[in-house]
Length: 206
Image 1 (cartoon, helix red, strand yellow):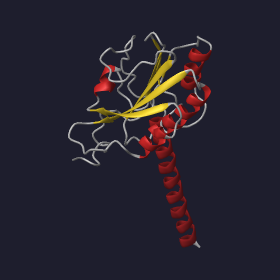
Image 2 (image 1 turned 180 degrees about the vertical axis):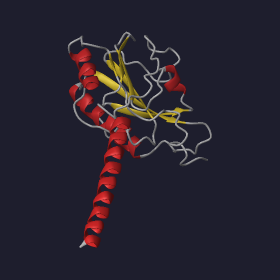
Image 3 (image 1 turned 45 degrees about the horizontal axis):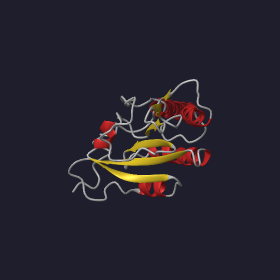
Image 4 (image 1 turned 30 degrees about the horizontal axis):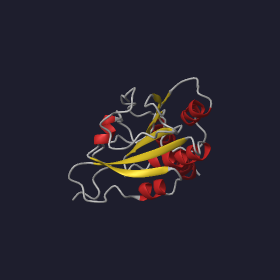
């Protein structure tokens, strides 16, 4: 009987330890998913040196993406919703960063294919992150919105966490700024990988 109680106590201790480890891991993952990335320093005006064009009769939205950042699938899913809401009011570019020394078409992942599927969106290579630098972006999923005159209207993310899909404050603010001309803020936290993350950039080096 004593051995039985000892065995049960041992099993109970292992179970308690397992639950503690699982709980701690869950908390760490949650904290990571809810930690914003670097907001960068988007310019107040459309950068004259940009290789892409500012729309003359609509708003222009630019999203900067690391093609191997799994968090950015959610950003592109939310972009699809945004473009549906802004049909005819905005044109969008999704710029996929490719670092120096990486193979041709390294940027053409499933994220590129997802961007191709969104009406009103044009995916484009951002070779060595030149455009990201012009738009002051540091985090994958960073989104900037300009009016037809080239004035910055919004900068930030359009998800409510890393890899989290669903309604969020950034998306609501961006849409409101286009459709109503106002919002409670023109900024929102951006969640995603560092655009220059070397670990996320290891695959496909040429």
